[in-house]
Image (cartoon, rainbow, N blue to C red; front, side, top):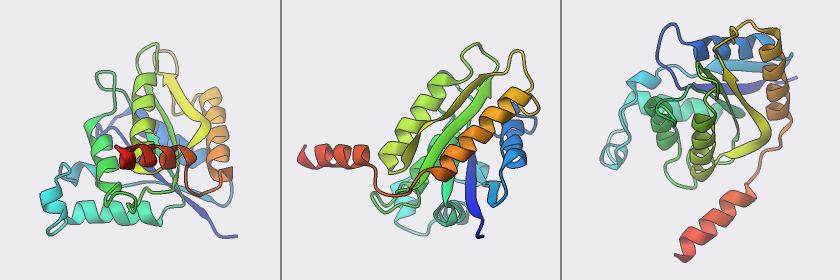
Length: 193
């Protein structure tokens, strides 16, 4: 059986990030035949700028696009910064969305998980990340999100969190690739504007 390649876009750059622990837990609970790996180098990707995208694309951005294009599925693991998506993750989504309609993210099944040391567990960040990824062309997997409060549990080792991560991975893997009806509807609205 060919492995299903799940690429993780990590929204935290901190070495001791609770979300890094969650990303590693995803890899640990992955079923046989599913390979979960964190996309390296997001800190080196410059802020998206069409001027440099139309010229010599920086190697970090090119590597990000190639890694996302090679993946079968994507999962964002992200904290919440000021009620929204961290800049490093939003920037990665911007780079892999171009050229519009043909970017590396287009048609990829996409899930969002993560934690924050608040009672809401990064819920707003997850909503913003899913919305951005869907507009960029990803297919958001229904019921494949986990907004975990890290106030009382270790998200990397808690058995309930790990069980929830496994369910999300199972849903992500089972989700069929293809064009998103919502994305097509939004594209039609943009084209008619």
